[in-house]
Image 1: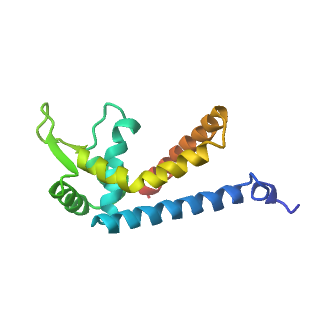
Image 2: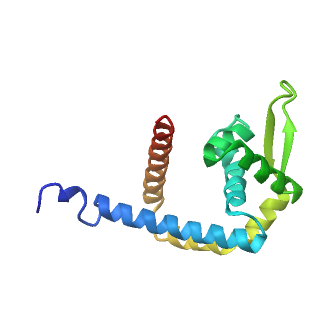
Image 3: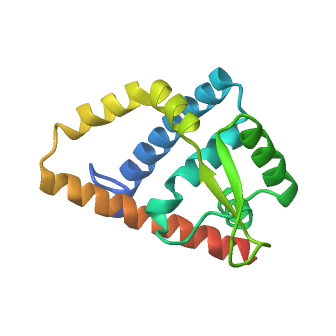
Length: 164
């Protein structure tokens, strides 16, 4: 084996992980773009909806704000404002002022968006369940641990890159 290939070759090598992660990312992007098109949304609107929906689970006790959303999506303040205006007009989100500091705006995901998403993404949920069924609970915990570690690394990389 050539020098350095052991980290990129083999069934659990870096190259195999990279190929499968890119493939999964491409499939998720395709599904998200199809959902955006079918729902009359911009792809960024879909990203924003998912980010707002996941915020309570990702950062409990820390409400999503337009500023945090801008950072998460890596877009301009103007783009976030336009996106939030569209989503609010469609009834998918609400913006509420923080009672302790009226300058702060909290973003909340509305049931209408959940209903719309559930209907469209039911086949994805069923596919996820089918894939999960082939693994033991212990294996699933390991996969989940890897995904969390990978997301932390990607988040750290984004943070480092934004400081350039």
